[in-house]
Amino acid sequence: MPIRFPLLAAGLLFATTAFAEDWPAFRGPNRDGVSKETGLLKTWPKDGPAKVWTAKNLGTGFGTPTVAKGMIFGMGTRGGKDGIWALKEADGMELWFTPIDEPRKTNQNNGPSATPTFDDGKVFGVSSNGKLVALDASNGKLIWQRDYIADFGGNVPSWGFTDSALIDGDKLICVPGGSKASLVALNKKTGKDIWKSSITGGGGGGGYCSPMKAKLAGAEMYIVLMGPSVGVVAVAPETGKLLWDYKGKGANGGTAQIPIPIVSEDNVWVSCSYGNGGSALLKIETNGSNQFKATALKTHQKSALNNHHGGMVKVGAYAYFGHEQNQGNPVCVDLKSGDIKWGPEKSPAGGGGSAAVLFADGLLYFRYQNGTMVLIEPSPTELKVVASFKEADRSGKESWAHPVIVGGKMYLRDQDKLACYDVKAK
Image (tube, rainbow, N blue to C red; front, side):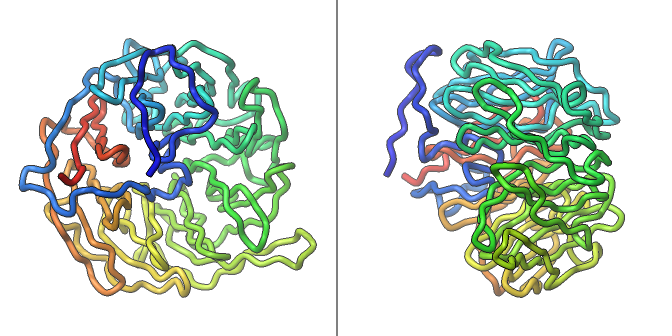
């Protein structure tokens, strides 16, 4: 089992990669919401696991925290600025806060929704208005900065930019959504351009998904769900060349297309909500000459099956997630056929609103936006609820940040607060 070391000082020297148990990016090292933690509680007391500490006054925001090298990173709006903060993992004490941009006033005025990415001693994050920065993780000092609008012709989406940078070797992959730079690869050390990928309709907006890397039909590629005029696309890692795209059911809902797709063998499961949303299982094939095509094996209308923004996880040959816009009704889908195995079921234990989903140590964690946490045993035959609890001292606002588990601790963000729970089995 890998060893995690505590933070010795704010100026500690970082190794070149995150610890195996760390959670350095949105939805984890592989962007799939699957944790490798073991030895966790198999059920919870009525009032939930023991709370270790609560960090307050972090700034409003819906972004999920990341955990790496004994530090926790997140984004928030405070003092009239969007910024990135760092806490000590051990006790939640703040180490630094770096303002990076003016806040965007959306109809929810919720602060930044992106999740910072940690890599090689640096923290990368994008503001709601599209300021992409690289900061020194030990002290929060600016290393380099780019601008999605000025540099890449991006258009600020209705709820601001929310993508979380993907690090792949020396490249940083981000999604400005500009007509001439839909996806961009930058040098993670300097912020300089490596390539720009121009995709027809790429400046149309509506995409709130973060990029992921996968291997399909024998080739590595970056995959991201963009706006409805683009759908889900895959580009070549070395050049940004478009390899395949799909704009059909499940990838052209409108308004906001959010969930990261699931890759299972050579299949891609994609889902989105709003007007023409729905779900689809795609088969990715190649002719062997670096030409690819995506074929829909199964599609579902929005009313039958869609995921809004809580994410989807793969466990074995099945996908688990919350169905419906502004809801989190549990459902299980076969990733070989695209068929629904069970559900959608009514949200259990009083869960309300969207559900952000995590898998760890054999169990599913459904975190509902009303502060209800539900522990579910994954099964392709039926919904099996194990335990639940209500988060205490709630803000009264939506909690859309995903749950994170690192080192036997579970982190739940509620706007300007972050609570740490002990979920390690004794």
